[in-house]
Image (tube, rainbow, N blue to C red; front, side):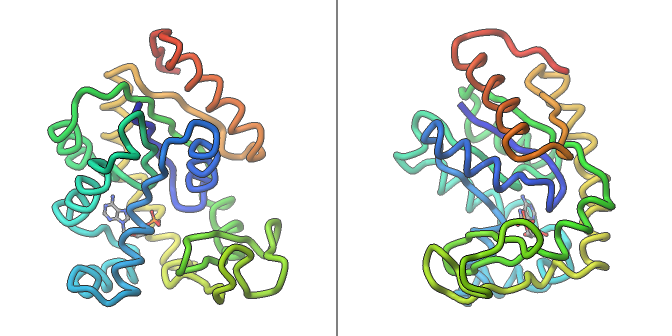
Length: 221
Ligand code: AMP
């Protein structure tokens, strides 16, 4: 199965992807994490994408697709994987279907307002080393500024500044609409209310994935 999570930055996609990974063993593939790692390591690719990322703009489709293509061909993706942050536009979705079109697809659109996103992201702190995400409002690390998992320092993402958050939200709305329509036509789209708690959202997601795995037909709602 290929699980795709659509939702603006701060909607809780990453958290839900982690829970799906834990529950089903589907590896989480976050293109944002892969790109940030490349930037941090100073690779050629990292140097190429740094400016776009800093400004909250989308990186070129072919660059992101190459990263995804390599990752989904790994053996741990055989039974399924969960995509967090990809595809971001219709072209990426169509390219993905070209590479791999045999997967049962389940797409979740997490619905949330811009006000709630701004509130959440202003408290977000991330570990660039292992990708763990915290929030000083409701998900603090045990020691201030230090990752619980690997002990590395926590930082505010360069693109979590209010003006960049707004720009990313605008781009999300603009580019995701055609994607939502595409998956809705394929009858693989399910909407979940992102204002709910992590647990409530995951319960909704899990019941749909379970239903899909056990062979029920997807119905768009
Ligand atoms: P994210 O962690 O998903 O919010 O992604 C952070 C940044 O990485 C985005 O603002 C983009 O600059 C870049 N990025 C991540 N995924 C993609 C993608 N699928 N297509 C283009 N750019 C991406």
